[in-house]
Length: 474
Image 1 (cartoon, rainbow, N blue to C red):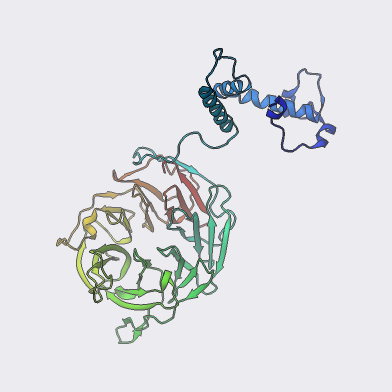
Image 2: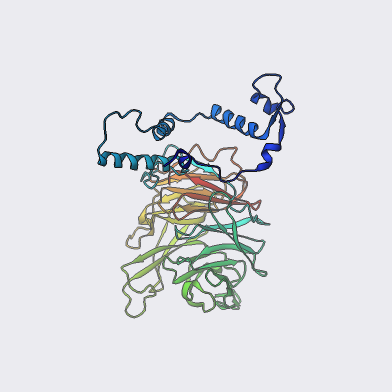
């Protein structure tokens, strides 16, 4: 093969470059390209050569790349003995591999293997472009949620501007995929169905809206689902007018909705979370007003609703505004345990991590109490629980508590003061001291979430921005 056939040519040439004339004296940034002080005008082709020389002077080629190129140009320079056909073939394959490496932009290090445990000393985090830079919200971002599948890089954002926005998260441009307008529903709670087929939208209205990702259609649930669920002192029915507290069970078959007067309604939705055929299965009643709820998981398999042939048990945890915790057997519709932690002054939020290994309770004082799996166990007969640790790094009411999927990081935040966000390491239960800092532009944190693979962390704030960060450990 001739030398000409081995050399690589430019994919495209602009013939007008030869007619361009550049002055090296007029621009201060170009004076460094002169060979002598009196040099001024040069042609376009000569200018290109000087720019390349200057770049290589600042960024010299590494020794291994120079040696590889030299070996390709003169493969017999250091090999005086005659090579066998086998060794010649092996050398040829090696040269082809080097040639391919030198003309590729990918990493030469295997990045598939990641350390299994996150170190507790420092959080390696990198700020990226805003997740919603191509479609910023016109109101505060009340909800940010990643798709539950690690193979679907989609993030939803929603707010009181009555719009749901979907973004393709690539860490670079994060293009917007879809915008859905809900004219009569200011959205305060948006979440993916566990199957990933639909999105639930709810707020301060007695109904919810589901958006089907496959068909692209929106469906409104029937109204008046629980019109007579609560009764006033004079005996009149008082229907719940809000669905701001709503969470799917792990299998997506049931939706728990917090109501007035300590009521919790359990809805059975259609396939994939469709709300068109939603119906109330039952309602549970606490002795105190509800503040938040969380599913504890299913035990023993079988039918979650306790119907004929079902041997399993699905449990639900509800928390009153005074910090009293109720554990419910959904199948039998009864409370199987209550407990209280005297150190928890006014509960505001509850979250489950590690499939029930940890439970975190945020309070009105800014303290977050972390409990072990005993807090969500109905088998225990104790009426009190002692936290594994009380995290006291915030002083305002906790409004966001979120675990990552690996249960190695927990984010806690408050919307009552700017910059109120902390990241907690598990299982050491220590707060990372290096992030966020006082210069991190968080604003007022309204909602947080981790991606399914834990590599991304999103923060929705009161300015309509969704800050995006890369957790480099994952």
